[in-house]
Length: 526
Image 1 (cartoon, helix red, strand yellow):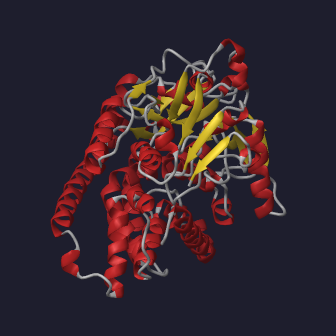
Image 2: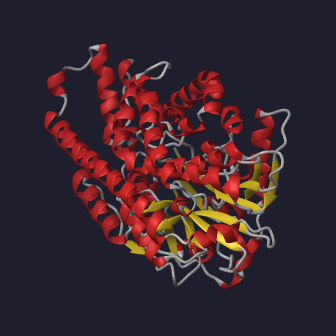
Image 3: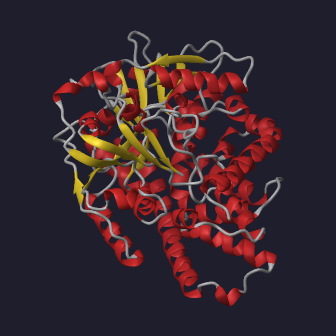
C-alpha cells in the first residue's frame, strides 16, 4: 500500500533522474534561453507537473494500492494517471473508468483551451496598443540615467489587493523616486489581457510590467518562441513518458500565461541591455513568471554591467524538506534562473538551512547569503508582542496556507483517521486563520460538502478576523496550533507552543526546519 511518504520517494527519484538527464540540454539553452519556459524544464511542485503524473502512473502500472489519505490528496489529473497506469498493465477494464466524468473533464478542458487562445489574441492586441499609444517612453530614458541609485523589485499583482500587493511582498518599502516595482504575474485573473488592462489604469510610473520595456518586434518574437516551446515539449529529442505527454496536453490551456512569461523574458533582456538599475530583487519561488525574467536578465548580462540580480526568498521561513524547488540545481544555476547566486532570506535559521543544503550539493560555489531586515518580514516573530500578556483561551487553532485542498486534507486527517485526535477534541471548537488567498465562503462550502460526502463529524469552525490580531497572537492564544503546508509552523515551534503538523501531499514534506524536527512540543500526523 502506497502512502504519502512512499509516493514522495518515487516523486523525488523522478525529478532527480530527469534533471540528471537534461544536463546535456545546457548548450541548447545557451543559444535558445527562452526554452527555459518549456514544461520540460519546470520542477515547480504542482499537481499536473510531469513528475507528479509520472509518479501516479508508475504506482498504477505496478498495480500498487494507494491509501485513503493519498487518494484524497489527489486531483483528477493524478487519479487519471493512476488509472491509465492500471489500464496499461491490464489490471483495469476500461468500462470501470467513469466515462461521464472523463467526458465532463474533456469539455471543461476544451472550454479553458478556447478561453486561453482567445485571451492570447487579446493580450497580443493589447500589447501593441499599450506600446504604441499608452506607454510613457520618457520613463525608459529616465531609468537609463546613471545619476541616481534606483532599484527594481518583482512581485505578483493580486486582483483583490490591487497596488497594495507591493506591501504584501515588501512591507516596509516606500514608493519613492528610487524604488520601482515590476509585476511578473497577475493572481486571481483568468485573463491576462484583462489583468494588464486593469493594471495600466491603476498604476503610476513606479509600477511596471513587461510591456513597459519591450517593442512591437519583441511581441512578435515572443509569439514565435511560444510556438517553438510547444514544439520542443511535444517533439523535442528527449525521453518521453506518460507524465510528459499528459502534462504537456494539460498545460496547453495555459498558453496565455506562457506568453506573458515570454514577455517577461524579453523585458529582462531589454532591462539589462538599456536600463541602469543598481540592484534587481526577484521574488523567487522557481515559478515560470519570475524564472523567465531572471533568465532574460542573465542572458544579456556582461562583465561590465554592475547591476546585481538577487533572488529573494520571501517565504515566512525556508525549509529544505518543503521548499525543494527553492534549492538550486546545477542546471538552473548554469542558465541563470538564480541570478547572481545571491540569496536574500527571511531569518537566520533559513539562512543556515539554505547554506547547508547548497554546501552539500556544491563543494565549490560562490553563493552569497543575506538575512533581510526585520521590518521587511511579512510576519513578525515573538519579538513583536509580550507573550506573558496573553492566556490560552482556545484549545485548537488551524493556521492555513494558500491551497484550498490543504484545508480539507487536514480536516480529513484529523477527523477521519485512526489517530486519537477526533476522540480527544471532538467537542472542542476549532479556530481557523485563513491565508489571504482563501475565501471564507468557499472554504465553508467545501467543508460542508466534506461532511456530507464522508459523514464526518467536524467541530464548529470559528474563523479568525485577521485584522483584529497578529499571527503570533493567534498562535499563543491556543493550546494546540495546527499546520498543514504553512511555514508559519516554525514560528510556533520557536515559541515552544504545542504544534500538530499534518502532512497533506506527496509533492513535498511538512515545512518544518531541521532545527525543530525533534522538538518535544511537535506532534506529527503523517
